[in-house]
Amino acid sequence: MSKLFIVPTPIGNLGDITLRALEVLRSVSLVLAEDTRTSGNLLKHYSIETPLRSHHKFNEHQSVEAIAEQIAAGLDVALISDAGTPGISDPGFLLVRTCLERGVEVECLPGATAFVPALVQSGMPCDRFVFEGFLPQKKGRSKRIEALQDEDRTMVFYESPFRLVKLLEQLMAVFGPDRRVSVSRELTKLHEETMRGTLAEVAAHFNSKTVKGEVVVVVQGLGRNKSLDEE
Image (cartoon, rainbow, N blue to C red; front, top):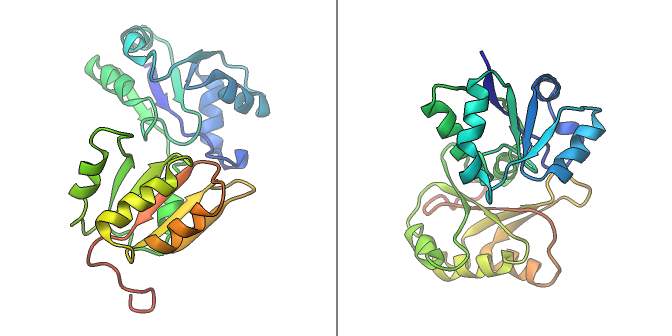
């Protein structure tokens, strides 16, 4: 039976792709990619010649029905994003839902997701956490942060490097300057950096430099502010 494969790709280091992911990308009839140029470089690196088709947030609403029909008719398709696991702050949810509604089998391979290493290496409790992804850029942003003021679980955010300092300052205004935070950027890449400290300390650190690369922000939950020595 034909199916839709959700295939995670490396978040930076190309060596982090799994053997099974490479096998699937070679075996399917079509690969749907968020950016065919970025994904084309990945496939070329591993000598994979499977045809690529663009599938991103600007065209997915118009294309999911046709893609689901093609899979139902016998076409094996893999979905990848620029980096990490599709559907996690990337296109993918709409296609998965449409395929399931049509009785098309969906299989998600395990693999890279940026927030997992950032969370684990933050030194904060990761037995319970809440993934917030990207906050709204404008409308609803402040209300969302205020709604998290009493959140007891560790919180994980994605953020643009251009808005990182603004986010840290907004969190500081609501959570207080002494709340613990860990910021990881450029994970698995040459210039990988993780900065840990209070919101005030980490905001000052990144305010003094030009921030580049993808960013994951991990914030300690209310009432879980014990030091590592106290855990």
